[in-house]
Length: 307
Image: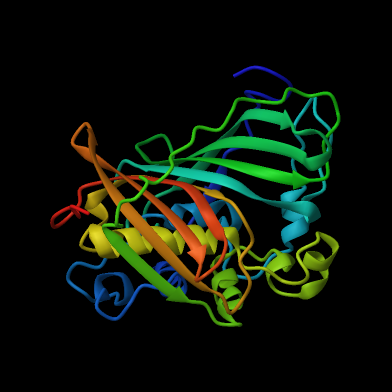
């Protein structure tokens, strides 16, 4: 890590969750009635959907709604401009899983430790802030590690480094996908998802999205990201979190309430430490790609497509 802001560590943040929180999360991203181990707390194999920690930087310990803008702007990164959190969208997210998340944090203390990987000036388009965040028991084991890129729209040209090139993970050409998952979004889906703790007004009312050039409210990027992960785990991983080691995607275009998302996934047959690389894209049905550079490391069920 080098450059302005790189290596800056945010104060450790205590986080907590209840069983009702993980039930809400699973339902809000599209888990279905044939996956009761995600949706019913008395199921003998009740589990947390593995990407749940991605919501904790927003939720923290809250059970009540919060002022998203006030919290987002509360800590400044030294040696870089102070960016406007009212004009920020997700750029890319990667998460690696080390231990299963317990159904509730009760009886243990958990914290997020976050540090800046880099702050990249993309000129007129804006600035990217790349951050690494680990979820761990206080003084104990790390459960997940996530790397995220936030894109601050129109907030560039401050003289910072341009940053490294993005690694591309395109799907194979001319090959039938090994799995396809479809999810119909309703006009209210963002209002359900925001109850997980991400109360960005961009996803609730039209005005912020109009100012940012989106024409109105858009879905949380992490809704699409989480629901795509669910699609992969359900279709290729037997809905078993133990079959997922790593998941990532780049946010390519906004999703509107009411859109239908279609995720296509391809098994590569290439393995890393026993985990097979899966590549995927998610698009609005019949239209634009909204998640690109999709990649997961999985233990897949069934046979690969030969076409």
